[in-house]
Image 1 (cartoon, helix red, strand yellow):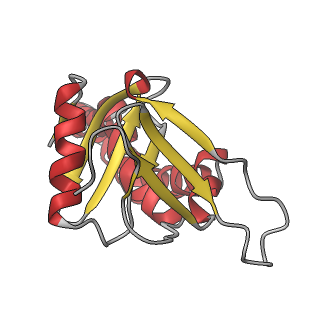
Image 2 (cartoon, rainbow, N blue to C red):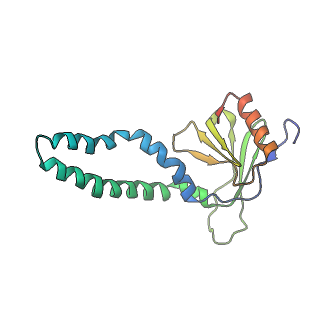
Image 3 (cartoon, rainbow, N blue to C red):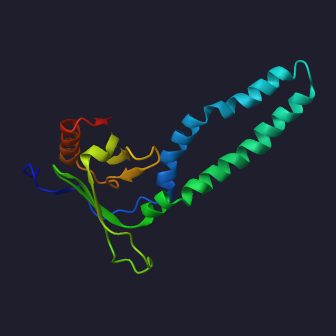
Length: 172
């Protein structure tokens, strides 16, 4: 464990991938659009008075919903936020905040985003699960930053949890 004030790297170089971003963003989208799930139920109730609604309900449930979910998935998978998840990076954290350093060693990427640093005040909450960690930013519910790949050690997790608690950031 490092002393206070020194940067600690949360693992080695990792590349989360766009699918990992979508896996975190889809539950947020579904939580905001839960009312769409009520449409087939309302049509089923309406079918008691007008049987055509049963056909419309089946069309919505079997044709419209899968298409909408596929469009939402592809929209998130090709978004600017998801595209930044495909670049190799290392993440370090200290008392000042979290620094993300993109690695330029891979020639298949022609344009790598610049490195940046997040202060602790810009983080709304964090999720430390097992050996992985992500931070949700205050700027948007869909601004999600991966903090490590699959190599967050127990002492690093405790240090990160201590820094989050010290700055009043909720984490689980």
